[in-house]
Image (cartoon, rainbow, N blue to C red):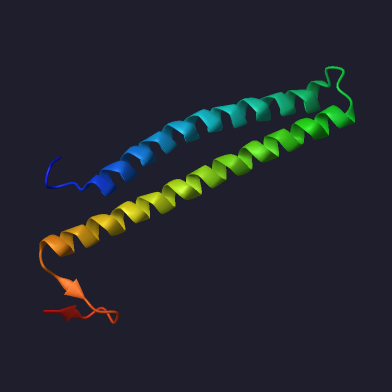
Length: 104
């Protein structure tokens, strides 16, 4: 492994890219379900009110899942940034105390 990356950062980066793919998949699923719901509401298509509300719950759950995935992806990006910065400081022999002051 390259000296520039440690195993933890590399693993986190791989997981981040996996989540990007999952977000694309779930976002597509959400949009298709939303279009179906809109079609049900506009065109009727023989659906009763219970079918529409059931589908509305599905769309709502899918949207919540997409938001949750995006939030976890942002948090993971911050974790990668933090780990990268800490690793850079260690490699530079720079250490800080709890107050943020440099310790020699």
